[in-house]
Image (cartoon, rainbow, N blue to C red; front, side, top):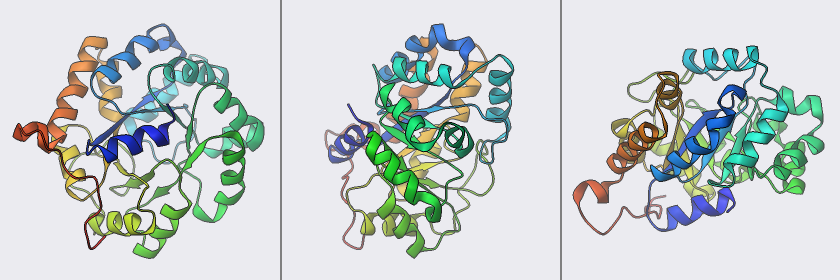
Length: 279
């Protein structure tokens, strides 16, 4: 299933969307299928598959160190394509990569390769709204949903413009700085940004990332009206500590169940996925 369809289906059913971020590392290639299946068993709606980059601007210390290790052990573009082929057999998959690796290969050829490997979404953290035009056209031709990011300090009007251009979902960054820091969101009005995005693109799921690592932080993001969350650093810490598929599945199941108000309340009716009247 395509990632846009999977997220829209979960949203329509009132299920919180949970998208783990998994960094590609060729040393983990043999265990990748089992890890992705464990994430699916734990309640993942889809997967964000990250390509390691030497100069990340959004990754915190844990993901930076993991990317450095992956590159030192020879992880290359071909490993990303192989990982996408494996992962997309189990979960709808978006690829996260910085712009430079795509530029090196050309927008069209790079996106065709990703789509041919089974990816249906593309997240580019250092791509601005003003530069997104050629990327959007190339992604559309390849059959990829180009996901744009909105930063914490963005105005409501700009959040709306980004939402209208984004496809698959809107990646709403909840804090300044890099991934991995816990605590309350830095965005002065995260709920207001979610409402602006929902008004501008009512059918587009809004997912919150940065700082989401457990059920409590996931609930906080969902409490702002977001449709789901992206969780990456906590998963990388778990894998780095040697957790196997069973441990990964249990960890994500706790996060997924704890983030879903209908499960925690023991009710059969889930949180409505529709925007509020003011949205």
